[in-house]
Image (spheres, rainbow, N blue to C red):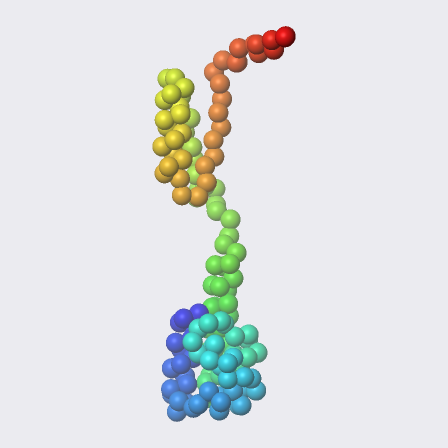
Length: 136
């Protein structure tokens, strides 16, 4: 967006640096809309971009392609593709000597985590039989 806005500002300067109200009148939009486009606050629609480029005497063929590249980049940022199999994290199985070692390792991993923690805990032996509840 910033690159697009910078190129749009260059076009404005090469067109004689017309005032916002002049550009807005030629492009049939508000001055605020022109300002947003020139300052990179939002990417104007393709239709509005066409009006702005026409108002500033730019080459629509080049700008149309540039607008589409920027739009694609923004869409990719909003909806990144899922990771490929080679990009997924692979985990190793770790066996701990005793429960305190497991708890220490888990606590270290929790403190170091940045996004999420995934854990599978598998017991080597089944738990002992449950103790029956005491009767009063």
